[in-house]
Image 1: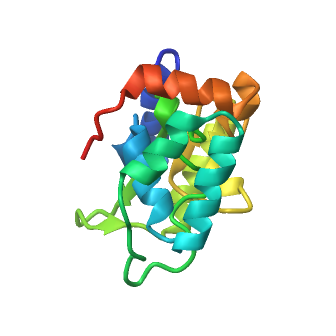
Image 2: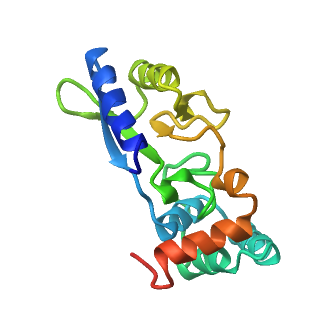
Length: 176
């Protein structure tokens, strides 16, 4: 994670633990290829092809290439709804300014759906002037990000600029 977000994350997780919940970050910096796979994993070919066409038309050729280059993805068994609404480059994870965390129960079990632990994370993140996915319409319970803008596109002005930033950061070798 970038600074000062990394330091804020360490402090936030300590406060959450003081409140009685152990939240464990499992995803911080996420490359564009992983983001593309996650996005594709719950979408059909028509929606994928339309997104590639929109990115290409907007001058975001690299991001269109990434979305295509990761190859076909099939819907994940048992997953209801979308894993992410963010196309590659549209998530703060690609900039090291977001993390996802799961809650660990006292017996060590991973808990994905505990409202109390995630509500505490969301409340304490807001108190620290961080953006908590807990409060979004598309609830992302364990997600916290540094910036309030939903997408880097709003911050950088266009998907074309974000596409160039992502190509500079991640290159054209498809990461597995």
